[in-house]
Image (cartoon, rainbow over all chains, first blue to last red; front, side, top):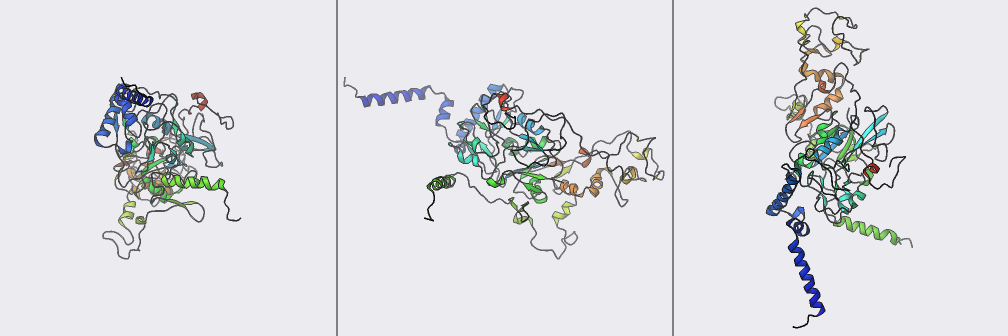
Length: 294
Length: 232
C-alpha cells in the first residue's frame, strides 16, 4: 500500500473530523453554526426557524407559545414620553414590564430603573437612588425619574457590536437577536444610559409567569449569556397596542405613539410642553422624551 | 511646526471616522420631531413642515367661522382626535342622584356654610376657603353642574367645569398629553374623564405604597466594583 505522506494524512484527518462533527450535529446546532442572520432570513427558512423556536418554548413551558415576526410598519417611527411632573415612583411600570416581557425573576432583570432624586438636584442618571424602599410614594421633597432604553436614533450600542446582533429597525426600535448575541457585553459598555441588562445565568421563569405571545426580537424566552433590554414591547406595538408600562401607569405619566403622526400624543407632547432628553450632549438623539405637563 | 498634529489624536480619530462610516444604519435620518434648543437655551420642539398653516385664511371655510379650520374645530370637541372616545363617567351614587328627587328648584339657601343636616360627610378640599357647593353645583337645577356664567351643564360634561380654572390641563387632556389613554396607539383610543382619577371634592392624589425596590447587584451575586455612597 502506498504510504500516506504527512500532508495527505492531516488533510484526511481534518475532513474526517469535520464530517463526523456535521453528522453528529442536531438540526439546532447546524442552524446556529451555519444559519443566516435574522435580517436575511426569508420565507421557508424564516418559517423553519420560528417553528423550531415555538416548538422548543412550548415544550419547555408546557403551553402554546407563539413567536411573531411582525415587521416594521411603513410611515411609523415610535417615540415615548414621560411626564416628570406626574410620576410618583410607584414602580408599577417596572413590574408590568417584567410580566409582559418574560424577564428572569432570579437573577432579577428589570428593564426600567426608577430613580428617586431630591428636588433641587440635577435631573441626571448619576443622581438619586434606585433602591428607595419607602412606605408611600411620592415622598415629600423628591421627584422620580424612570429610565430605560432611550431608543436612540444614533445608538452607540449598535455600532460596537462585533457580530451585528443588535440594530435599529426602521420603526426606530433598537432590537437584539438573542440567538446571534455572543454575550461580550460591549454594547452594555457603550450604552450611556445603562439600559442593557445581561443574563448571568439561565433565566428563571415559570409557566405561570410566562407571557406566551412573543416576538422573535422582543419578549421570547432568552437563554443565558445574552444581553436584553426594553423593546417598547415590540410584540404589542407592532400589533397596534400600547406598551405595558404605558397601559399600567396609574397617573397617566407615560405617553407613546408614532412620531411621524402630528396628532399622536407624543407629537403633541413635543408641540405643547417643555421637553428634554437625557445626556443630550452625547448626540445619541433619544426617542424617549421627558416633559412637564400642566 | 504649527500644522503638526499629535499622532496620538490622529489615529483614534481616523479609526472612529472609519468605524462610523462603516456602521450599518444611517445615523441621522430625517427626523420631523427633532428637539432643538431655542435661543433661550430651553429645548423647543420643531414641528414638521406640514403642521403649520402657511397662509392666513381670508375666506371662511364652509360651515366654520373665519379663521377656524377643521383642525381647530375638532379641538372644540372633548378630544381633538375623533378616534378617541370618552369613557362613560363613573357610576353616580344611586342614593344621591338624581338630586332633584330631594331638592326643589326654588328651595335653596345661598349662604356659604358648613353643611350639618345632610351631605355632612363631604369634605371640600378644593379651594374650600374661597368656594363652596353652589360654585360648581347649580342651585336651581340640582342634576346639573354650573359654569361661571351660570350656564347649567350635564355631569357628563364636567370637564368643561374643571377646565374653567384648569385650562392648561384641559387643553393638554384634549390632545392626550394630560391623563391616561388606553387602547391602540394607531386606532381607537379610550380617554378618561377628569373625575375618573380626580375626586372633585378633594382632587389631589393620595400617596400610596410603591412596588418593591429592585435587588442590588450584590444580592443577585453579581461582581461589583463601583460603590457610590454606600450603594453596592
